[in-house]
Image (cartoon, rainbow, N blue to C red; front, side, top):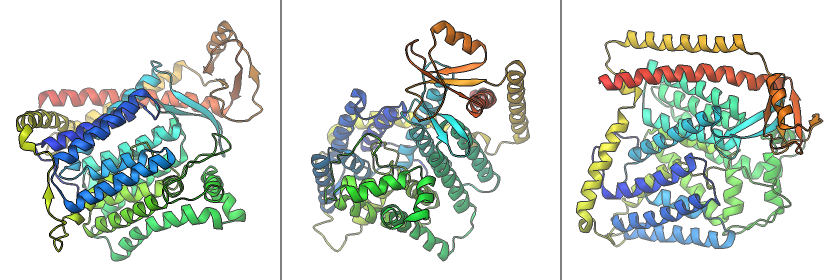
Length: 534
């Protein structure tokens, strides 16, 4: 499934790429449901999907599947107001005759660019980052950042997606390259966690990195290991749907605490809300009642029919990935399935579940083998591409050229077969040393924060923190004395003071960021110079 990118782009690939690029760009800049831009993008996505289907040769069986799944999505939308099953199906059903390697390469650069730029704009104060103060078990009160995304968990789950795309982009690698890839991704995950403090996001990303390293480092995967791999998804289902209503006592309390009350929320929805074939429109006591488990969301919100389809889809997908020895896709799929226990992104509006595209590839592989049913394998093309051949050819050339330009940014390609590898290593070491010196300079001329004052909006916890009311001049004076103030609005709005570990974490973030971004800036300059020389 992870194949080399070919040079030529067909018109239908361009249509699909435009659709996917638009959706992921809006998601990458922090767009969410309800925003005019986001809603307009969803309308565009559905229109482009319709054009893509009409331009593609589909068999009768495929048209039947498309019609049934889209009809199911429409029924779920009518019953629940949730459009996400419908939209996820467009991602799945649109992959016929598409090289998903090309598509995911473009998605990577879109998300990586928006993520990094958004991160930097928040760090430099150009944008005000989304943040909230939470008590973290065993640590204390910590300010958790979502940056340009609405929640810290969304921030880190976006990084999980980017990590998966990086792994898929790099492809199979062994030895030192695999070790370097693993170390750099772990370091990046730790750095993002320093801001998000999302335990589930950090754990899910670490699991993905380690699964990828494990599958790639193994020369041969044993039958026992593959059986375990096939069991992971059913275990996730049982743990998510059966566990909350059967586990009791101390065991339930421990799991619920580890999952930050998610198990208790799952129990509420599984026992207090009605089940339905085609989904349920929930009525909950207040906004704190939400589903953070993908499987509970699919089963209860989308309905039993959608749940059965999703379960069959993942069982077949994982089996095919194992049979075809698709190790990259298998690592990503298993990591996402496990992450779905504590995160809702597998089936919700986030568009972070790229394994749906893998599932689409497998679906069309299976439909192509219905050779015993001549009527079902008859191909139909509603809108022949020949009628728009000139446009197709020109757009294909332009988009292929754009793809060629993005490929030169592969660090592996720059370093491959380079006789001056020692010089590259020395340059990298110098960059790390200079970054360290700049961080030490900052430490020498500054001191740890005495404390942090946060607004009522940021202070999303119940505590005995002292309350202060400050004028603008008083707030400035506090900052000059070594305090941080987040979310200040006016003298009539309360500010809550937190001291000790809260300020220390904030100060540590500054020091580490100076180091990280100094090194990144130097390495970027070096890469640009090498690209120019190349």
